[in-house]
Length: 97
Image (cartoon, rainbow, N blue to C red; front, side, top):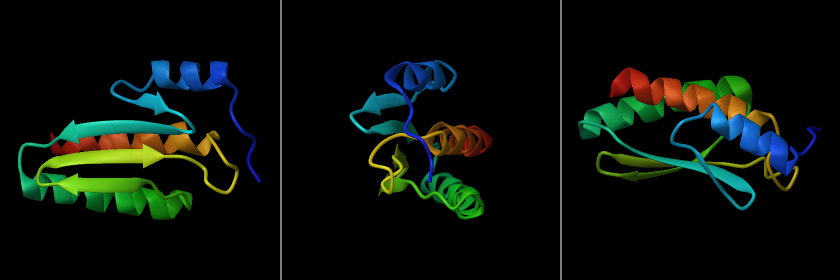
């Protein structure tokens, strides 16, 4: 069981995660990759990181545009798992941009 982050803790975490924004009980980032294959390669890398973390984002794929949404559903909001995985998602995006 993970503790929910306070509003201040969420804001602090987001300050170190460029492109991520809070949307209620989630954090969200939309990115545009150079090509569809680059977008899918990014999703593949995120899937590997999510499996290792046992924490899975919602992913919307629209050609080369990806939207990632993170929330710890079992806890009903944001926990440390969310910014941790957001950082890994950002690294995957950077690797394929």
